[in-house]
Length: 277
Image 1: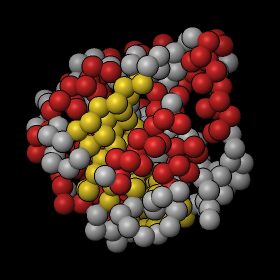
Image 2: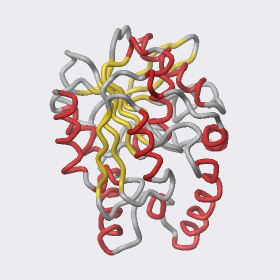
Image 3: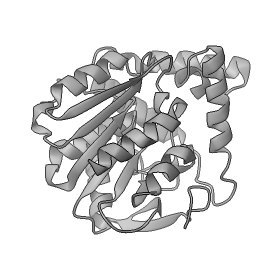
Image 4: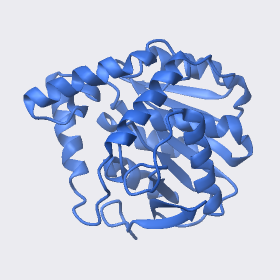
């Protein structure tokens, strides 16, 4: 069986645009569709999380419009990103899916569930918050500061955005990046400048948007985050969980935006139990 290290990249035509995706796990039951974070491409998924879920489920991860190897350009609003994700899922001929959204991907997952509730069975929303959440509009300043530090210290910005700068946090970051480097062939294209800017505009606009009525999302939702998320305040995750009718909140200690990667050994069993409940 394929692992995330060896799963081949595939393409599918969606309304004239070639979408790139990878799938693994047994192709039966309700598939789990992964939606990734700001500036991420397929190679940025943590293999331990993907492989852990795929050991029991059919997993599909894809580059949304304009991201990585997928054609066209990234739209600058969440609703269109959600529509594009729906179009991809429908192009695969899927009637129902579970959604796993991390960060920006969690915001897109909410758009999918709001627009097409019939398409979603369950959702995992990690390191993310609701539209209109406090402080989300500050993302360009937070990201800008992290990129400046990354340039000075010659590190990936996620060292500063995803993990606390404690001894344990630095160790978790080092291990995370080592796992990302396990795949060495059939790599995705890096994020483009257009995609980066469009995603940032979408996030900023979402922070200033009127709050969505999350009470209309009736499906079970697992909300997870670190206890000190610098990008999307942990308080926003807690607020989102309170506003969702059927949500469970899990907060990992001494961790940040990438808490689910920092605590992947605890998080994967939590996800599997939630999906099997």
